[in-house]
Length: 293
Image (tube, rainbow, N blue to C red):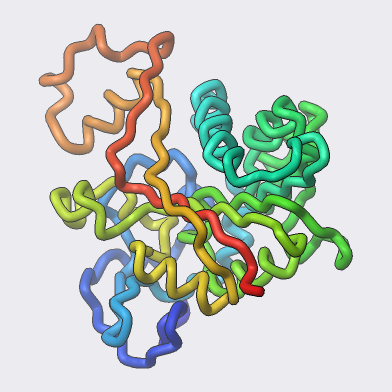
């Protein structure tokens, strides 16, 4: 693990350790599983004395861990994740001046192509890019246009009317650079949708370091102010901020609840894969932005 000597948002050089966390010498792809339930386990978290942004040190071979990741539990929740994808896209619709059928959409960190699939069903000319080989192969087998790699692996002249960055920016060592790469791919009137956990939300403040978004895979912790600062540094202007909700099976929720209460207190009949419910604890941010004129 390499030391981080500057703030990834404002460039400040004075960082204070606010959570010692774990410093494992043998990190593996399993530590970065999307469905990892080990809430509260993190790498050391440092806060910028200038802007308050919280981040973890750089991790040697971070991209390689994501490329080798295998997470079967992620695909088990595909129906619910697809409903969430439709919800994200519906938030964008009021800001679009033209029909979906004439718009190109890119999903960065597309996973197994769930949002790409939903967008294509809504009429968008959608594609994705995903570094995890296992997830990209699932998308490919389903006939979904998801490229293996990162946004930098797209053709130089590729431009999009909508770019979605859903739960990705908290995982990368260069978040402002990623936002700039997205901005460079946007058409003149294009929209960028950024979704990420909000570390200053009520849920995060109530649960403290036990909050479910504190985990090893998350190396950046944004709030409204630091996300706005990162967007500004990438010459992007927010036009709308929302609190997106999610959808889970009862079994998934009960299994996650075990991190907070004894399992014996959770009625067994609640552990159902057939029942899914919408949930919005208002601890995620969705910011829709455009390029500055």
